Image (cartoon, rainbow, N blue to C red; front, side, top):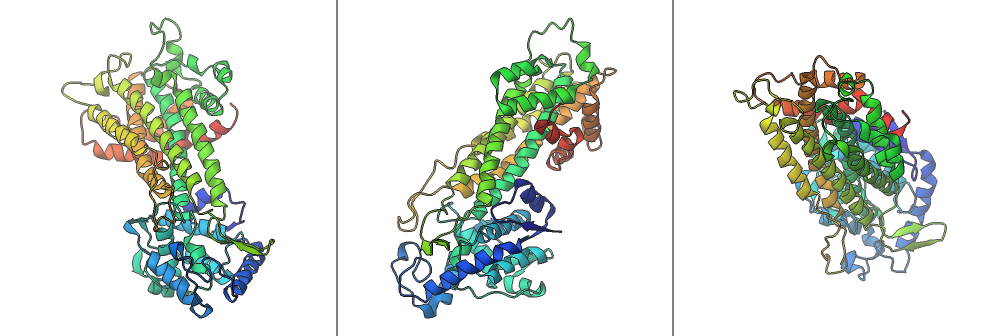
Length: 512
């Protein structure tokens, strides 16, 4: 299937489908007249006498050096090759393809001066499954994601490496096998391809997609944990949350009420429970996870705007008849969004880890056996699984340190303030993986705890979640090799099966 992208109007839902499902993408044909008009203006400027940055001049600190028209094509080729300075492991294929789609969206606005045939080759990469090998390190998130995008652009001119049908090949060979031909870049095209925030934005979007899935899974897991320790649902009272007014908090409380509706475990201790209040990790779940949800929603809106933005330089303002040098390539909005996502991931994991700790502690778990094993002492149960969640929680706290507050001058002080958005966005993958394990262990603990409450049963929705967990992780009756259990439980979270089992997304967005 191929998604048709309308420049300026792509949605988060479209981009998530493209990323998760490996779809191809193409620009709405209605974008072509604007692209052609801008390309014509650039061609005219390249043949003219006036110095225009990046069209007939050098780049960065070399902007004052004029380049004659006869060297236009060589100038653009040299730009790409000289900027292919990325290092480290390659960006994963789905996120690389998303980056290409974002570049298409930017070019499709008709302000970059790229020819239609160059944009069409980007579409061809997606359609034919040719994925540039893009080293993930090397961008400081200003003057665009220069090094990563240069590696993407190198494939278009037949340089560097690309993945095709699972094999890493020289780019020219990969193109040939896919029935594609490299292009010779015209004026401004190399600069239009590598100036921009598409690497940072693609990584941030991938982080956002996973963070939202983790947040949804955390709501479901927290409900199962609440029943496992026979926690109170009184703190979910609608009027309580309405009095504070935060949308995320209200939405999480509403979803939790719906998920826990009909629990016999809950009904069994409404009267005569000697506990007055539950610990914060149970009582304050809507306040914490809801606040994280608000932060994620705000970051998502920022990234949706950026996904549709034109962020290269200079920009071709066709209606005004001029080409203007500016700073749209500075990725500060993306850097801030990535930092916000990181904070949300860290806090969702922090409160989830405390729920795990609560369930394995017999002094706090309301009569559950130590470490949730039927024979404590002989068996250690989930003792070290809880320690693993503590390790991952702590790692995420360190990774959540803001990246956008860092800057260092580059390019002989021409680029003297940078966003570090690429750093901020890249770490989200690792943080989300850590969080999925924390939530997976919480589900394992909560499932054990609810089973210990038999013959009392949990709610119908949580019973469906329990069955989903048990489909991958058996009840822990005696000690066994645990690493595989943790891996399978985390996969349930990452694959969206936890969220889907309770219909969390709809509950967070709609009414009870």
